[in-house]
Amino acid sequence: MVAESETGNILAYGGLVTLLVDSPQLDGFLEQVIRLAAEVVTPAAAGGITFDREGRPVTAATSAPLAAQVDEVQYGADSGPCLDALRGGEVVAADDLATETRWPDFASFAVAHGLGSSLSLPLRVGDRTIGALNLYAHEPAAFRGAARRHAEAFAVQCGAALTVALRQSDAAVLRRQLTEAMAARSVIDQALGILMAQQRCTAEQAFDLLRQASQHRNRKLREVAAELVTKVSGGPPQPPAPFHAVSQWLEDA
Image (cartoon, rainbow, N blue to C red; front, side, top):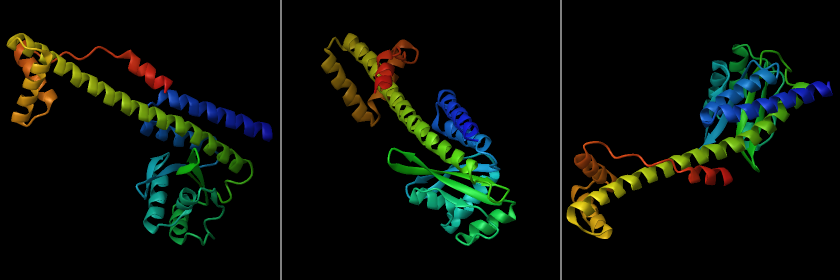
C-alpha cells in the first residue's frame, strides 16, 4: 500500500511539472491542476480551487460544474469546509454529509446533488495559505486512509508548483511591461530622428518639440511620435528588435 501511494505521488508530481511547462498562463495551469487532482486523488467525483480575492472567496478552477455549484453555496452562506480550510490553513474533512451539522446549508445542498463526503486542503505558498483544494465524492468516507494521505501530499506538491507558476505569471507580466516600454521608446526615438533631420536640431531640442506637441494636443508622447512617424514614412513605426537580455535577466531572477 505504501509503495502504491508513493508511486501515485511521484506520478502526480510529474504531472504537475508537465503542467508548468505546458500551461504558461496561470488560469490554464489551475484548470489543468484541478483536473489532475480529480484523476489522481481517487475517488473524487469533482474538485475545485478556491482563492481569496480581496477578502472574498472565488472559485478559480473546477473539474466539473457541480464543484462550482457546491462552492458557491458555501460562499453564499459564508460557511463550509472550503472556507474553513482557506481561513484556518488546516485540512477539513466531512466523512458523512448526510449527518453533517457543521455547515447545514452546504451539507443539504451537497446531499441533494448526490455527494456523500468532501475533503478541503489548504494551498500554501511559503508560510501563507492562499487557497484551498476542494474534493467531493459520491461515497461517504471516501477520503480516509491512503486516499487522504495521497490528497494531502498532492496539495503540498500543488502548493510548490503554484509558487513556481505565480513566479512565472509575474515574470510574464513584467516581460510584457518591459516589451511595451521598449516599443514606446523605439517609436519616440524614430520620431526624434525625423525632427532632428527636419529642424536641424539636437536630440534634446527635438524631444522638447515632441513634448510640447504632446502637451498641446493632450495626447501621450508615444501617440504623437507614432503619428509623426506614420505621416512621414507612410507606414506604422517599426517594432524594436527582440531584447534577449531581458528574457535572460528574468530567467536568472
